[in-house]
Length: 64
Image 1 (cartoon, helix red, strand yellow):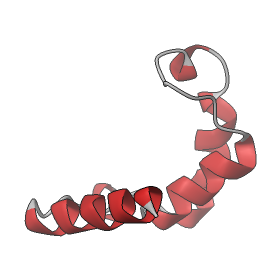
Image 2 (spheres, rainbow, N blue to C red):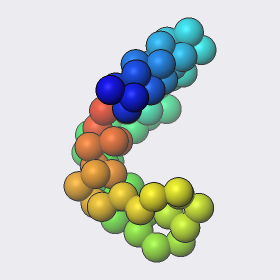
Image 3 (cartoon, rainbow, N blue to C red):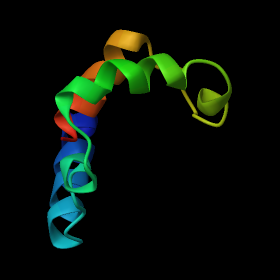
């Protein structure tokens, strides 16, 4: 229940702050595979959790 509340709050804040989608910066679904591949290793070190390639793919797809 807490997780669902957090997700709802983050979606609300995203709308209020008008956070642009990744597609507004030129990212397309066809780019996700390369981003996931290039994210392995160093660029993921500062994340509080390690995302699997499938999880990262889903996150990026939802942010388009």
